[in-house]
Length: 202
Image (cartoon, rainbow, N blue to C red; front, top):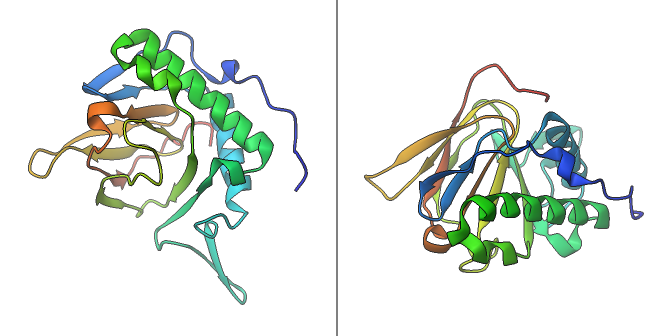
């Protein structure tokens, strides 16, 4: 594919003075930090990127005329940033930098996160019945000590976290971001449910 459109100024994709909530040392939640415009831009980016096979072979499995999500009630796409279209990689890089700048400004103890260089982009699509089992992210997604940054768009979702027997959860609304790293780099987590009716600007 061609180089695509010129990168957009991502600052307008973020709320002014958004709060940063610490859920655990090294695990933070930024409610509604991404504006409606930013959400639409990122969802469009995800849909465009997932049309390409990538290392996870795209969102869809196609057999003849049959087209299905690649993981049952959900679809997963991931690839190295260097394999993305240049304008996609640039936008994701800039948005990560902006998110981490917001976090570090309010949580100076996480200053090392400002040095993050994104290696992998993942786009997960969940139906109402979609779930993600409890797991720890491998180092193929982020090097040890580097944070994992996740944004949520569409219907509310319940995100579980914590060791077995001590699980907690947080509701992610459309436009929310969570990030974990450092002491929580190996945070055990899961996508417990998708619910509600308000999908925001989606």
